[in-house]
Image (cartoon, rainbow, N blue to C red; front, top):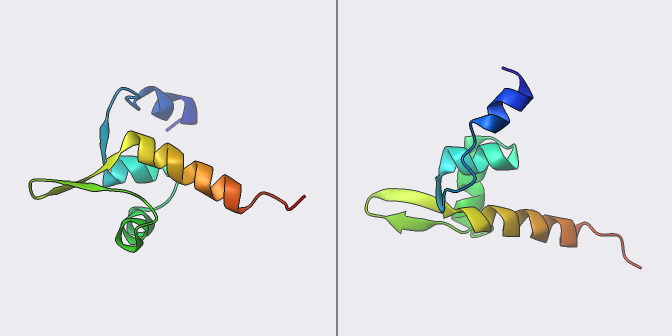
Length: 73
């Protein structure tokens, strides 16, 4: 599938993401995404028996990575 086409299918209005959707946005595997959730590095919330990742938690996680890997000045 063309990368441009897969981006079209991403609904940016979602507030809570399935783990698979969060992994796709981070461009990581589902297993790694669950590992990040288990370690507390990526925020998630229970919704009944389901596990969801707040959309802004994905953005915050990426921002934390950027801050952690910023060269020292």
